[in-house]
Image 1 (tube, protein in one colour):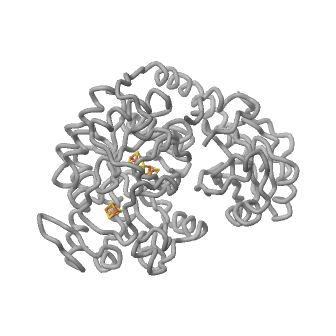
Image 2 (image 1 turned 135 degrees about the vertical axis):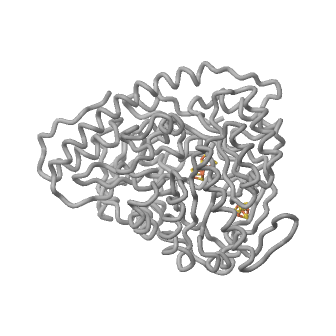
Image 3 (image 1 turned 120 degrees about the vertical axis):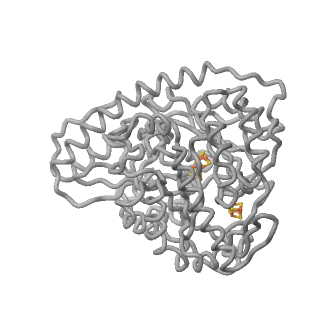
Length: 490
Ligand code: CLF
Ligand code: SF4
């Protein structure tokens, strides 16, 4: 079983052993600056939810249980696959399970992953079309772990029929995938839907889906259930249209808007993959997200999880918790999660103070914005070795502060103890395009030199410091403020 990252290992100075294995800071949706002006009751709902709060995703984990295989629509970007352990994208799962099995699995994960705060049901089909299994799973889990947050993700077609049941089960996080508010555009994304016992195609299908999605948003808002809208950005199909989607969902009370890039590959067997529809580049996605600033709050830290994802958002422990590895007699032990939460509360307060100091210092600079990447295992710190990173978190820094703007997945440079130059040249350098500096806890002299040759500066001078503090120090230094006094390692 993988070595689950503990907060102690995150905060400890010195490199830990390798593992086996969003929101803008200017918005009010749970930024790295914390609660801000957010009402207390909303903050309490999101502060430990890794998807609804960018800050929380440094500390807390989610898990999905794949109990809902049936779906009532066809999306051109979806092909639900089973027994697929090497792909990380929505709809993919290694195994389907019953609600009883799911409850056992949740207990097993909670005992091993103290960061766990949310149980989500995101398919592999549609959680609200397959509502019996979804609600039965929540009923079973609630009896064993009453403090876990529950969350569902749905296409919205069946959702209006289950609003009261969601409220009755205390489910206060619902994600609806909305890719259009113009049914003409919907015809390019949805070939058919199945509604009230009948199959619809073309414009009729898209109109019904659109009306049901809008009805859902209004009904959820009336029950004070927090709604996140996921939209898949499909270049040439709905990319610019997502500005209208953002306005429409904001008007109907959505709390967050998560624009995700289309994942398209012929090998996935999806309609878009087979017809050559491309996904957006990292730059195109960021450009659209920047245009959306000022509308509904944006989530930028989504990792497009599998239907059986387990762990912190940037990691996947799903293969450590397949049913064959779970003891049928497992009992829940709450102690590890309780202790972890105590440590997080202390750590959070410390980090927020450090971020405030960093922001004050940056306010005095007047240099252009820069994009940097950070290797982190969690805790909001620069705490991962360059060679062990399978993703980098991307931040933008200027006089307004340090803002999380996304992530880039990469292949591991370190392969069994050796650096792989081909991975560096063919994967890491192209993936880090546009990034000026990479913050790591440690890096060898060879990759450092090779990155420099590609125009990327590797920074290993701030191991285990808070991300914002490390970036602010570097930025102040390159802009001639070498004597800044920023918060240091806690
Ligand atoms: Fe799962 Fe979705 Fe709940 Fe999160 S995921 S049901 S809100 S607990 Fe999160 Fe995964 Fe992105 Fe979804 S990173 S795909 S946004
Ligand atoms: Fe696939 Fe979800 Fe679309 Fe259904 S709603 S076809 S499960 S992406």
